[in-house]
Image (cartoon, rainbow, N blue to C red; front, side, top):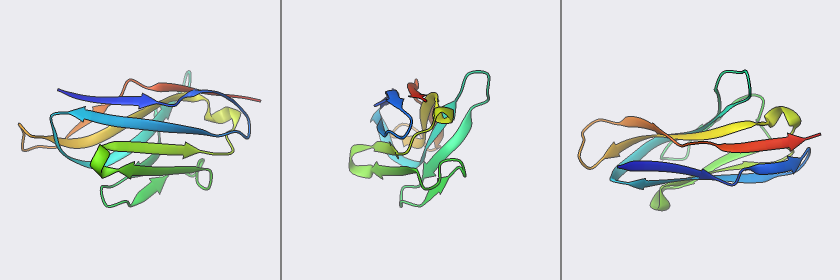
Length: 121
């Protein structure tokens, strides 16, 4: 059994900051790429940022310079530091991970349940 659990969401004023965490637990042998996605009401889920096991990162243009993705491989945990938040960043934020279980020889993608981020103007 594998679980991804997000935390750190909440309500913040425009210009403020939040730090999201995503902890992976369970029967995990290795985690490859991890990522943050978000979905605003009435919109499709979109990529926010991804990070490889080696630390290479990729960001959506809308968050470049404001958000920073990082991970702690020893703790199977990923973070998203969000600064200078804007009302348009309001969404449910989901983490995902491409991981290999001890009982498998194939990487599968797992998703967390999401955490709400609301930015007031």
